[in-house]
Length: 218
Ligand SMILES: *[C@@H]1O[C@H](CO)[C@@H](O)[C@H](O)[C@H]1NC(C)=O
Image (cartoon, rainbow, N blue to C red):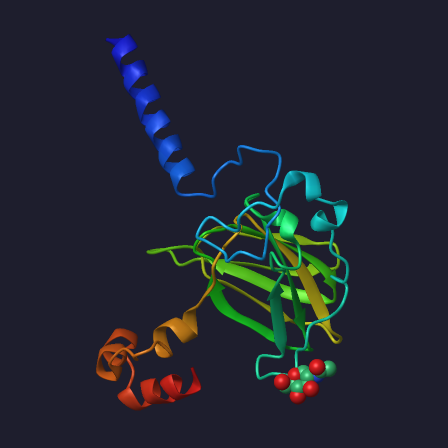
């Protein structure tokens, strides 16, 4: 009897790990597959450049210390490093990005459907937080300074803002080649075509005029 239970448990955990494998980036079956950007990108990334033609520069990028342009209504900039810039990332299941903030600049609530994220503050003071799923919707937040790290679990809504006097910035590492980003405001109030405003008014317990304002702003 105990043996059967053990066997069942083993089967369940095996099934779970197969599911986890199937829903994340694939494990590479070669040392690397440097993106050959002459060909277009497919859902699994780019075709591989001939390994004999691969050079160290394919895995190298300079300039991540350069701040992005924060002259916009959010006072922030978030830029993912592309495979064209760093072709060696292709098929490795990781992405890097840099975010910059003017004083009180905000990176609005958003989530990455396919990746957890680690942010490392390289300048300034940043409030960073994420919200757990229903029904708790608990906000877990921290004030971060240079050298501090914060983790945003995959698929959870998160945000950051600059709470210091000067500029602020972080470098983000994401656990997928194609993490995706869903900006909550844009998705709900700025979809194309828009979701009916009477539906959203009911969903958010507000007057339809409030929804119209939000739809105009997104
Ligand atoms: C930053 O962006 C603003 C708004 O798009 C633009 O007017 C400005 O020229 C940009 N600054 C730089 C240094 O690129």
